[in-house]
Image 1 (cartoon, rainbow, N blue to C red):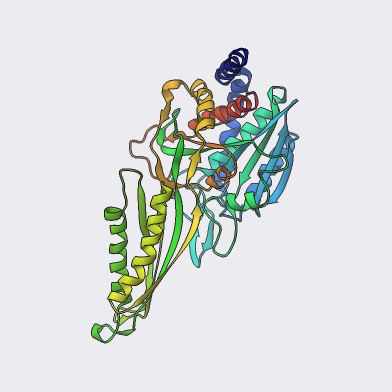
Image 2 (image 1 turned 90 degrees about the horizontal axis):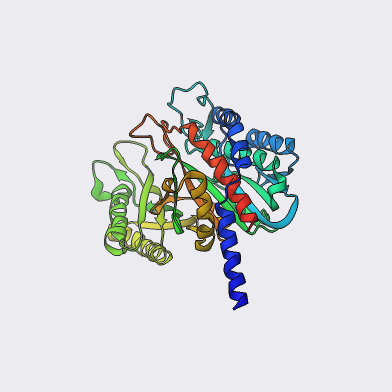
Length: 426
């Protein structure tokens, strides 16, 4: 009976600790809000693509070192890791921010608009933080500063992980969270849990969205190569049209989703994003290539879709006199929020943001390579409101008009700082 009472008292004590917000932490976050916004604007104006974030990494490392944080660079090519030891012994918690930009040409009219241009996969393009990673870097730099000022409140160690290539490394290269894990980022010291956030242009400022268990989809990239027989465009009967076969394959793939996947259990998507074929209007080409993505939130549904794609693609091509092969590459796993960790840390979010502002959300078919960390240790990933205050129809992520309201970043600094302290004070 005494053991049961002590156990209940321990649980009650943790609940109180998790809900007890430290005013000094909140005040420290508010004091550096303007600086966090300045950092964000600098990163936004000088974006760098995946595995090429060299100047971004230098700025991050310099900031961490200025606060006496043990700093290591060059992890997973351009990643930066900082280790902050509290005044007391305890567990180790990791906080992660992604740092890469996208090959998108910005259309926003901002004084800190990106004017960077580069070549990406053979095409000239602009470079833009069109997914909010610039805000993630600035928020985490703010958290590092806040916690460095209050090491006396840290019972254990905080590991800051600034991760490159979340959007995926260039073809032929390794990168991202999977490479960081491979290179031992969760070791020395061993990390007990990890937290991450993503700002969202469609979530109101001041609001946090979360979901236990599967919250973002597993992502596969696929390439389908179709082979036909080249001929004159005026005589299609003398050849085999790979473009027609490609159209039939695309149509067939959609039936896997609409007729074979049990969508009442979980969402799933197959999308073809690129088709390449032909050189001239009056020539039926010999080959065609399709590139696309598969998104799943259920492991069994994922197995079914991959199996049916491998069966269907060559069969459709054969039916029209051609050949086709499909290659499927795993990009990310399911972003899975550990239920116990989520439950324990939810009171912290509610206390910092206000209980009414912490919303249970549905899963999304977007993908996140934060999932590779969660495959190794318990993790919790949530969404931070950044919807422009004067917009009813904010631009989606990964678009030239993507825009984030900077007033939403302060809540990110507050919540990540408090999550780290509360977790270590369990």
